[in-house]
Structure formats: structure tokens, C-alpha cells
Length: 320
Image 1 (tube, rainbow, N blue to C red):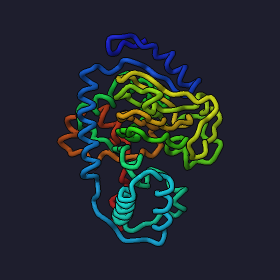
Image 2: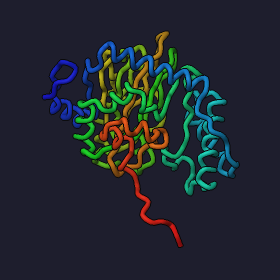
Image 3: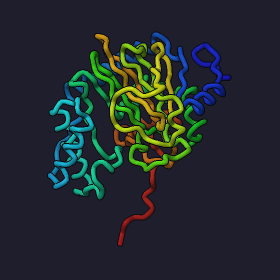
């Protein structure tokens, strides 16, 4: 048992349910004040994403760019054309920063960690913010939540790290998404690994209901060691992961899941903390976003989760 938010949580039962069904839900972890602070911080990030998204520049073109552009437009078919254009600029910029080095495999085989994605979808109403700023106090508190860390470490080991923290706002009157498993499993051959590589931890910022697009999952689908086809539609035995705002939903990245259809007039928001084993390449590198002064103010636990002392070493001076 563990006491948090003024109540006792049966950790062993939650872990057992997670292992059996592939997901679990714990309600009532965030207070009304926490939720208000979180919503305010998230809306600031969403507004910035809409009005001044990250767009550091461009780079030289490459013969593969047309194929990459087509792939992004197919995978993110509800993204505005201008947002796909921004993702392509970011891809070319990052390639230029890496001395113009192209990927040695077709774009559909490229690890999603390396590929920028459109962050406005749903024909403009859905907003996604990756690499959410960990220096925002409420975001840091979510990452260091004792219950969250205990569950993540029980699955991925005490040395697990943060793969990404993202913010989602599923827009009103948007269709449901495509069934999928999470990075890096989409690029792995079947059968998928039997041990979990990553774990998705979702803080419900609004009530998750059937009507507003609560995440749909297929219980125990992680046991198949297979991947679903990237498409929408209904699945046999699928259920909606519903719960009140302030709840925490956790699922294996190998569990088949998708966003539900939001038929309401309001967005459905969530803050996602995605953890991976220490030897799995994280989705985002947070270290360049954090100044030395900011890092010194963080706890050792938070710094480690963000990649400090959890990255490859420079092992030689490089001198000939």
C-alpha cells in the first residue's frame, strides 16, 4: 500500500492489473488547485504552439524529401498543410545540423524519435506539444510524483528515464485516431519483445468520457506481441479508458490504443509522461532545453530522468 493525495493506493493490485490487462487507472491523484495550475500552464504552451511554434530554420533539400513529405501527409492526414511544411523544415534543419547526413532506410522504417511530426491536427483543432518544458514547476511535480515513479520503476527498472513529456488537446468534433503501439515498437518486427520497453503515463486534465474522446484500448492486446494496422475503426473487445480529471492512466506501449472521437464542444486535454528503459533511446533530448542554472535547482531524481548522467559518454579527445 502507498498513501498519496490523502488516500491509500494498492500498488501491488495496480501492477497486477497493468500486467494482466495492459493498462490500469488510479483516480483522484491531483487536487483542484493542481489541476487549475496544470491547465493554466498547458494553455500557455498550446497558445505558443498555435501562434509561434518551434521553427528554427531550414536546410538543404535531399532527393528523399518528396517521399518524406508524402509520408507525413499520409500519416497525419488531418494536419494543416502549413504544419506539415513546418515539420519538413524542421527535418531539413536537423539534417543540416547533422552535417547533411540522410537516413539509410526508407522513411517508413525511420525511428519516430528522429522524425519531426506535425503538432497541429484535427483540421486545426487538435494541438500536441512535445518536449514539454520540464522547468515549469507543475510539469516537474508530475514527473516526480512518487506513485508515478514507483509504478514506472516497477515495470522498467529503477534506472528508467523519461522518453518524452507531451501535452495533448484533442479538439472538439474531431474523429477518432488510428490504432497503434507507441515508439519504438512501431518500427520493430513481430513478434514484439515480451518485456515492456516503454510505459505511457497519462494525467487526465479533463474528465475522460466516451463523448469527449477518451482513449480507446484493446485489453490484453499487448500479450499478442503484434502490432495493429495503422487505421481507425472499431476493434473487438475495445473499451474506453474513462475517469475524472486528476486521474492517472498507465498502459504498456505495446497495448493497442487510439484517441477516441470527441463529439463535444470542448477539448479533451492530457499531460503524458512517457518512460523507457535506460538502454532505450528516448524520444526527446531535454538537456539542451535546460540551462546550468536551471539544472542546479532540480532534484537529482529529476535531472536523471531528463537524461543527465543517463546518456552516452565522450570517451576520447578526438585528436589524431
